[in-house]
Image 1 (tube, rainbow, N blue to C red):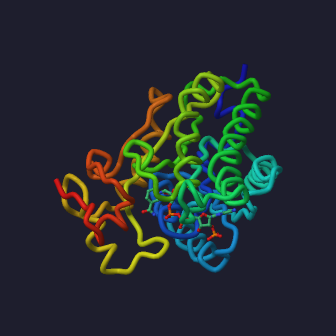
Image 2: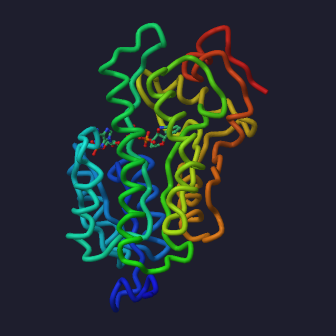
Length: 275
Ligand SMILES: NC(=O)c1ccc[n+]([C@@H]2O[C@H](COP(=O)([O-])OP(=O)(O)OC[C@H]3O[C@@H](n4cnc5c(N)ncnc54)[C@H](OP(=O)(O)O)[C@@H]3O)[C@@H](O)[C@H]2O)c1
């Protein structure tokens, strides 16, 4: 049996595929991997200019950064993306970070079939199929990966701290969170599967800057969560061969502050709670 570095030919370089890499957390994760010596396959959909800017920044660090493009709602997106990854880098990635997601406001009673399907396709189905495809590709190689190949499913503190807002988004992330252990079992020994649950990092949806400023402090440390800290957790998971089926919560303890509503609504209503 060939080792993982034999399977990569003479190139010992490690490569990570990051979905939704061009902006916000995806960009932080991509830069954290590049700084740690990884090449980055930067997936994006609409953010082509931001993806090119990321590419230039990563290349300035001395790492490669091919750009990949796909609509993750498509049933064939996972296979297509892994095909693009192999074609552009000539090798299989050692890690996939499923970071891209759709985050649309709805409630249980207003959720539509189209909205649920959209969230599930992007946030659950394609991430799971990407992990399966990576494990299948490494298994086909027959090279023992010795814990060096991994998938990081980016979750949300919401899955540990439920409230009924953003219903379709939350259900899609709950399904992904519950799949971490299942996939860790199913994809062993080829690929490790872990979760990474950030708390509120960026202004999203209908938030105003003032609302974000207050909401970002509703956690045990009363200070905003630094996305760079979250990004470093993804690198830590990828580089630690003993972590499997685990979820890291990088949220200043936000998941321990129970709220009746999403924090962006709670801080403007009577339901806000500060520990
Ligand atoms: N933002 C927060 O405060 C927060 C809090 C907790 C958890 N999270 C989680 O952390 C991760 C990153 O959050 P974020 O706020 O940085 O994400 P984001 O800006 O909302 O979305 C990241 C990227 O996902 C891509 N994307 C969305 N739908 C897609 C589709 N159908 N096909 C392909 N790409 C698609 C977009 O790429 P393009 O721009 O290229 O189209 C977008 O830039 C997500 O998994 C999110 O659930 C975020």
